[in-house]
Image (tube, rainbow, N blue to C red):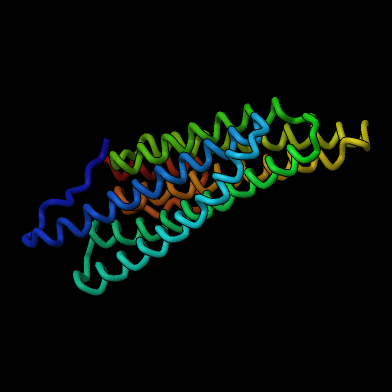
Length: 240
């Protein structure tokens, strides 16, 4: 596990500023984590009350994004950070954006839950949805743990898992397309499940983005648009 030293500045207030950014981001991450979990539960269990709760929480996520953006701007203006401190501020700003978008996708899942409850019938695709949801939830959990511990190995594991989720998503979409062709009466219901699956896949993508930001934060490596094997090679090379 890699470590950043956020408490080694002459100014105690500077130490506090950086630690506050980390704490605020983890708090926002926890809210989004619960939002994603509740969104999945609302569609899996046809729970319209929980779906409406997920939609309501989006306002708080948006407010926290704006507050963190302002905090990052103030730290940049007052402290003019360099090296790992600058990477910390930049990474928090980028991660905040991805967390907000994860919240948006969780809200879409909740909207699809409400639509399916209105349909009044269970449709094909729930097994695939639960399976992909399990993988996405694990990615979100591990992504937050990776940031909390500045753990590059955990971040790499999230990137690998995103590839698995993408494969499962493509397989599920093919199966659902076949179901629609075999039973045209199910098209509306299956489309709602497909939109929910798409949002889950996007949540996984944002978790991967955050994992890449964590690698940049800790190692100073920009690994965006890089294959997993190349990412692992770069991290291993920088560790030597």
